Length: 347
Image (tube, rainbow, N blue to C red; front, side):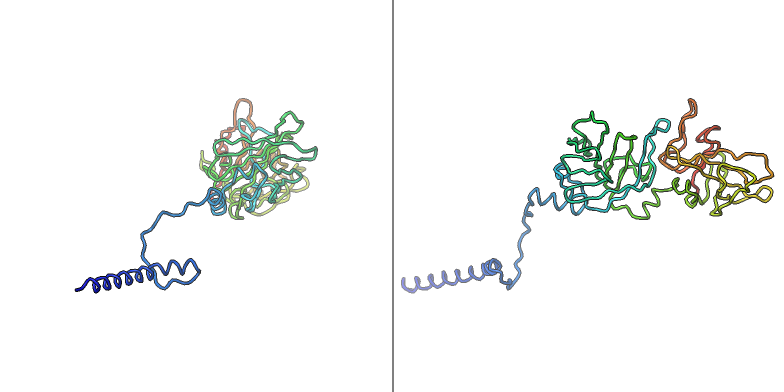
């Protein structure tokens, strides 16, 4: 083969090689220009493109409902945009050795992009405003929990707002039954009557019914429906079965509480045994158990109606040692012992 022929062949091979390269690169060029690819190309998986810290934070917040402490401290409440419901409250009492939390309540917490509102109290990040004025806030973070405090705590009425992300506290176990909170929680506290109100995010009606248990406010108003069911004493295994039948005492008995709910079982002279209520005091009701029998000289016995989370006041040196995580009916108001006289739900 002549030198001229060899050169011609080499040139032709180079041109064919360039054409092949051009065809391999064409899908990438088409993609860059917004054209559909003609064929898929198998490639080794590469490292995923790292998101910016802002992207990762926004994604995690929206997907898992996490509280964004940085935003909250700056008055941005976008990470709290779920539905919030009051699950508990307490006010101005120490029952024995522990503060009492009562399930339920009628307080409201409203979330706006730049403010939280609790009734007539507003929090905007930098300050808290109540009926008396506006007060600067400071923030402290500990054990995954964020607390907003007044910078000047020498004021007549003090406040704090605490933010509990999921899984950061056992403080509300007596209400929810959870070892650690399964939902985000916000707690508002004020030194005015030492009032605390607790809100949880996205609480269902079924959960709220479970949290509520005994509804002492309803009982005080004459609605005994939350008492209905079987109650059992863990010491002697005796039971009380509360019906839904409301009974009115004969006028001649002149009782403090003339209405109550009947128990199932034996009666006395044709009159059923009855639980009667009373006003709510320190989170519980000092009610009574007895017969609405005008022929009997026996007065009804004290019966404490105690919702979970509430500890009865001590009697002398004896503290309430009944199970605070459960609703209780305590015969004698604890005079014969708290735990030994306590009845718990058995159904």
